[in-house]
Length: 491
Image 1 (cartoon, rainbow, N blue to C red):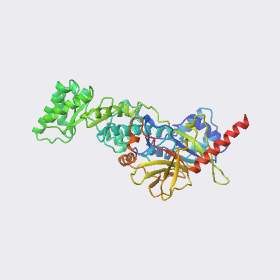
Image 2: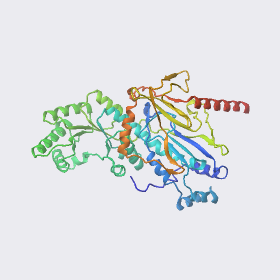
Image 3: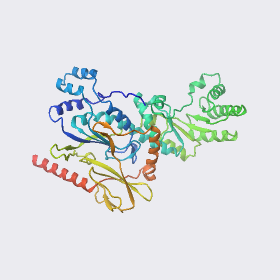
Image 4: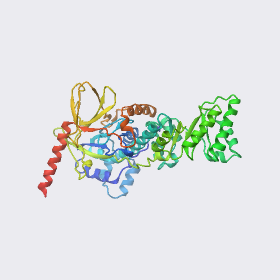
């Protein structure tokens, strides 16, 4: 990880700053609650994986406007000197709560909650969305790819196809959190202390007089990591026989074959891998790695598994690092409450829409996850007001907030409860230590085990319910009724 994070204070939409100036001259001290959440699971799945929090923390801790920033903003001709003077000494002073990275998450529940003076809460919107949307998207895609691989190692190596350096760096980070065993991206490896992996390109083979010489040279250079790319000329007639010849010579020379095998990057991967395995096994190399690449994703890997392909290592690039079937995560950042300066209570706010999916959940909230004691699996998530508590010894009834007739009784003593939102910043000071990427990867693996298999399948996955507490549901219904009546009165 870099010792000094970049100052990303101007990584924002212009309207965040123009609104800030408006707030500065009208209601600078008003404390508000904003929620970041998403509405639809990526890739047609039933869940997502939260990622990016460490970079959000770095952004908040380094949030300040340099003299160069102020000079630039002055040059735009839309900010007055009083406001620019305020920005010159700006620091974030609010509170932030978040669901930890690597956690399985679902639509509509706050991933991040910001409680701060409205100018501060407004400014951080764009950067939080930019960071969390991207990494959560790639982590979710990687979780699907790794699930398809059924325990085989998945290598992330999409850097050359990522949409720019940052997407490559932080996309690889997110992919490893979600289950990849390493990345080809050396800078990501350095920054986050994660394994870097790779073999060689077709150009290595083509630069030598013949394939055998290329393989032999590479094997002597890297005897402990000798994965040979066998499809430059002909996989079965040239590549695999030459690889076997090199492996036999290494064995004869007394070189212990630790991590060795072949990689196939084109052609019918199912057929070629099965035939290659027969040849390797016949020569006494049945433990060789057979790695595949070539525009893989969770669907192709699942198909190859179903065809009994003899592949036990997967290199996934473009379709993972770009999440090519779902180019955006869709997280949003919405005002949920405004603090009454007299009473200190939070006044709930709601956004209405003709689209019911876009009606927000009001108030200062938290999220509880309900697990079955018998299975350890997730039964449901419950969005509650922040002052609500759940007693797992009490029987409760939860219900679908849209189809309210769908109710489930959860018997006391049969479930466990975990509050998902935890403090990250208090009064502008970070109170949370980010785990390492390796620790997050292990945590994320445990998180995914709390999902039912039916929720992890790729076609028509079973939905995990995200319900509202009765108290929050009643508040939301009341606000909708009040606003609807007000609208009728104004017509």
